[in-house]
Every structure is written in structure tokens, then in C-alpha cells.
Length: 279
Figure 1 (cartoon, one colour):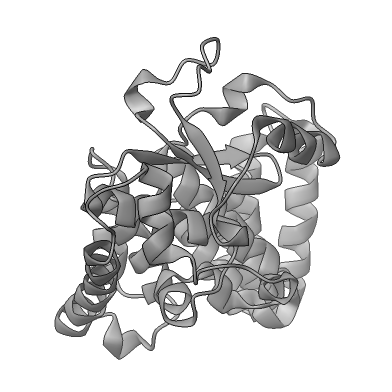
Figure 2 (cartoon, rainbow, N blue to C red):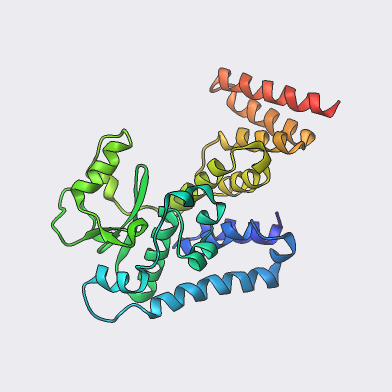
């Protein structure tokens, strides 16, 4: 980690309007060598990612139905099942380069290109799948779905997604479909979901370095789950940073034990494992 990249990330996610493009680029910067996360190299990295989005927006036709305009520039972007096995699928510059990625990153490309091209669009965080709504996000009303907006699925090249198909996606995930699930997704919630995907990818002990930076970025979000503090301690433990793990887990146990004694005890058992590693 570097203080430069972390300070910029914290500033972006805590300053409205939230810039999803910059936040996702700063997430990707964590995968760079430390010397590329200092001021000048980081500026070049961010500029390159923003320029790639600008170039795509320049290819959006000036006229036509909004979803068709976006599709004309973005149809080559899509996803494949094996993308879930790759960290690159959650890193915006790699998604821009490969034209492949997870649904949430492909949707981010669509919404950021739409914003630049003057097309009203927004992310839709369905349970188990992320898509894009084309229409004015400020007038969204779950009780008045009047055909003035469309859903598209960037994972499938931006094909139209009928509302019945969206309902089926939600129900296949084991949840009950509600129209409120079609609401515009908060950009910081999108960043949090990206980081959750990365943490899931990095669940194995050998991927603990990636899991640690994903957890530490998530802790910088204005709203986050307190259990991330335990996850940080576990990542430090997997890395063999036993002293830091003990401190992190003891602090978390002190915080959570008055509210959830069982969770506090689980954290203390992990802290005991970390102390054993100090011997």
C-alpha cells in the first residue's frame, strides 16, 4: 500500500458526487507495484484509464435510441464464465483492455461511457447479477415502470433484458423479486460490491496479499461492515504478520464483544492463533 493511493481513494469515495470511474481505477492501482502508486506514476495510470473511457464515449453515435447508441460503441464488451476465475475481471483497466470482465465492471464501463456521451444510464445491482438501466435515474419510480427506461445486460454484449427476465435472475438467486431492486445503484455501494468480489476471489491463504488490500480499501468507505476488521486480522494472520494480526483481532474483539459475545470469542480465538505464531 502507499499513502498516496489510499488518500486519493478515501477522498474520492467521501466526496460527492462520487466518481465511480476514478474509484475503480484506484482499486486497480492496488495491484500495481508500490513505485507505480506514487504521485506521478499514479497520475499517468489514472489518466490512461480515463482516456480509454473518453475514447469509447467518442464512438457513441449522436443520434438514435439511447441503448442502441451505447451498444454501437460497447457491443464488443462481454463476459464469459471463466472470467470469474481471474482477478483482472475486477480491475477496470484490464476490463477496458480485454473487453471482458465481471458484470459489475462491464456495467461500470457502460455507465461511465454513457455519462461522457450524455446518455442517461445507471447501474442496477440485482442480487447475483449487475446490469444497466437506460433512462433518467433521478425520476426512477418502482411503482411507475412505464416503458420510459430499459434494462440492458453488458455481460451479454448489452442485449436488452426484459423485466420478466430480470425477475427470473433474482428468483434464481434465491431471493424474492421486488421492483425496488431495479433502482439506481449508489456508486459507493458499487465500489463495495467490486471489493467484495475481489475479497471472494482472494479467499485462499496464498491470495492473502490481495485480500488484505481489498479489505483495507473497503474499510475506507464511509459505510462498511464492522466484520471487515476481523477479515483484516485474518488476512494478516494468513500473511504471517502475526503481531499486526494480534492487534487487529484484539481491537475487533474489544469492539464487537459487548454487542455479540460469540463473535467476540471467535475473534479472540483467532488472536490466540496469531500469538502462537509469535513464539
